[in-house]
Image: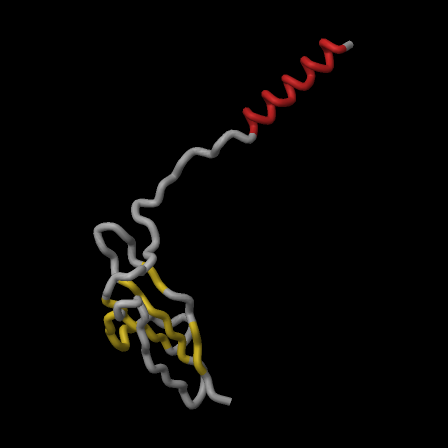
Length: 105
């Protein structure tokens, strides 16, 4: 009886380790950018509708604390969508901020 219990426990552990093993590694070619302490060029992009293409509005450089600042406007009707893009480098791929939109009441 005791041998059967030990054998069942070992089989359960073996199955658990086999079925939940580490998944195969799929590394991205370049990690997403984390701007930290470096002065980089960033671009403000805008589109006037959800299906429109992104257009570059303005280019800025970050300061020593990796901060940037852009002015945004609002249309008389509808929404304008904005995001910020950081260009690709040898170490990082091109990355974007969240998308924000402006509108008037």
